Length: 88
Image (cartoon, rainbow, N blue to C red):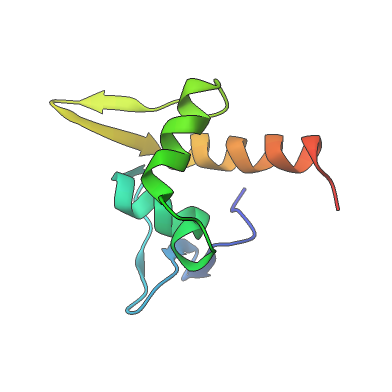
């Protein structure tokens, strides 16, 4: 399943932005912010929003070396959960 906020290019998900880039399975914090489009909303600190979701248990992250990464499937699960909790 590909999230509604992510288009595809030859069947591969694409990160929003300029320029658009292929969406990897394992995303950096910056890529996760772009994937969720927190950078294009009126969110004061998108990185703290990701930390909030992790702290509340809504989003699971993976530590690779010294860096925190986000699996695309976990971001999709977050979107599913937020949609279920607040359907519009």
